[in-house]
Length: 302
Ligand SMILES: [Zn+2]
Image (cartoon, rainbow, N blue to C red):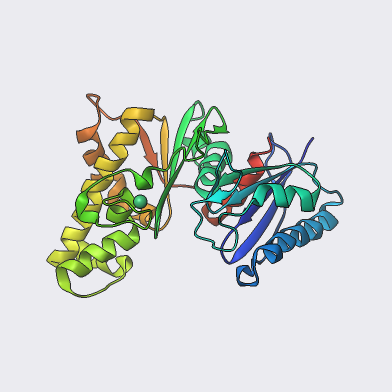
């Protein structure tokens, strides 16, 4: 049985995991070290190698191929990493340099794709729909990412932007996005976008986790408006995915993905905008928590 090796490269931590096999994805080893991104690109590369060597010692063998979950995506024509919030590796030939250092091939996908793959392979999807063919995984947190899995494979796309619904236009009221456009989904329904909206209404900055209870109790009408905004625009935004991709299952990860109302009122709202008399798409919470990224990276090697 071939073991599956994965690395999840984050802004602060690098995590490695080895799964027993694709048919029995029991984690054999998991290990984390600091990324130390401030020390620069070469240092991050050598930290990844260091981590793999440490894990190899425990497992008793080195990998012959390894999956890497990255912040951002490899730009197919140039081979450079793009759209990454980690400045140390953005616009660098990360895949080529890492393969040269490790002496083995790597398979790379962004963190939202790895999340979707892990939940599709060994997370919530096999529980709720073992026959699912198309899975859309969403990470709604400070930003808004997404990944598509079809028949157990990540759909990276021609330009490496498959699943990036966070930068679909949703509503002009979201204002400017860091990507240079206006009204992106991320500006409207990410945690940051919702906190900005509440601040515009009240002049006060509050965390979403403090806004939500005030909305549920009804004590703060602007908090109610903020939650209503999330519910409405989540339904509208996700309906565009449903109409195009018609996935079997949608998994909602990230801090905002945890908001209970998405699974009740949010689903009803999505149904209003979906091109079907009823909504059969399963919209569910993830199962794997923080581990999804590194497990998904390992499954890239399947
Ligand atoms: Zn954008």
